[in-house]
Image (cartoon, rainbow, N blue to C red):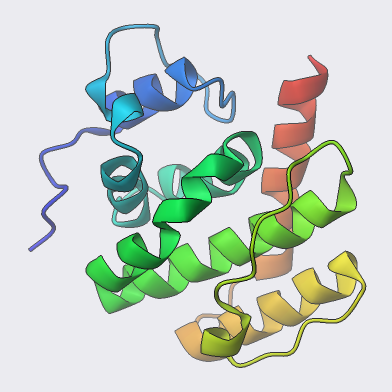
Length: 160
């Protein structure tokens, strides 16, 4: 059973808004105590039933690279399907961050676990990650397009 089921999508959206992650429409500056509990926030997003909330992990890591200290613990504690998405979205944020010099770099925690070797090219790494994500998930999703969508929306949020 999802231990984060009691956390609503509105609570997650509000928390992201408080943290300055302008990825989702809506969100209010209501008190959302999850912003003080990054590991619980990350797990709740990873295990969310809503794809938009899971995808918000990418801009969250780009805006708050300090949350990277929690990723291995969170990955170990979530369900296997949530773990794969979490690892891939974190890794996508890592490669996107490498493209932007003003973004604090994220450590590479999951390339070996996911079974691919990164190159020096962040765009190639995103392509390789998307391919591996599809293989491991068994889903015929355009993962590269998904990662790039998160990047585009994040870019608009920081430019706006």
